[in-house]
Image 1: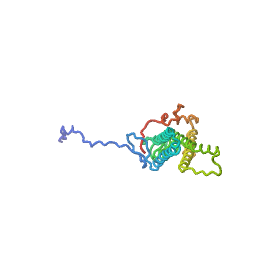
Image 2 (image 1 turned 60 degrees about the vertical axis):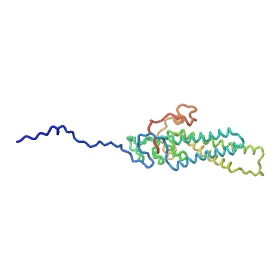
Image 3 (image 1 turned 45 degrees about the vertical axis):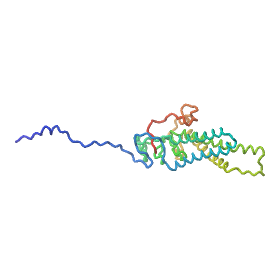
Image 4 (image 1 turned 90 degrees about the vertical axis):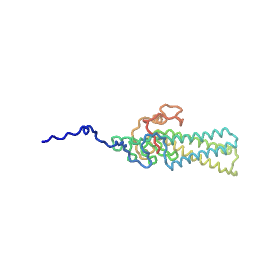
Length: 292
């Protein structure tokens, strides 16, 4: 029998031809229409919601308009220019910077694409991310927010674990500014009545601008004081508004109301508790922020 043919040397040394290497694409979860895509860029937090943007801009315009009418009707006639400038700057810049801080701060969104826990209920079915205890999915933001209290259209953002301090201070200072305006309008009226300048035969016809200021200040004081009281109750009881509405007691409390206050405003008691520009200690690991 003839021996089998031996292949040529160049055939033995020839390497197999491989196709082009394909880059493995990460598996992306099925996200809702408002959820951002995954990516390596670090972006500021902002919620692209038309209704929320309209409400937030309305709040800013209403505050600036009230400050301008107050300056024109109360301070300029009294020729108190220095006080009018201080009042306008305090109400215009301070309150709007607080609103911007509450609006542009990540409320505690759960990072997208994080592997869920062992329990089946640990995965959010809407954004396909891990769902920590006491986290809820916001349909407007399209994200799960840790310790979510509610979504506020007036600041166009959720109120959660990382921006609750800024929202509480925003309602506090807005309520105090509204109370100050009510006193500016009411004290002269009460003084005139005490001096006997007004009686049953007097005809009083206040200007429309002053009636506008009174109604805006009264409504703002009632809304902000109510919201501030609700937020303080949620912090002291360690139960969010969503938990109270769902009658969910959640996890057992870890401490007293005092410890809950320190967890929101800062572990060291100081004037920074009242400072909207002082950030409390971070309560989570650093991760990417996303435009939603």
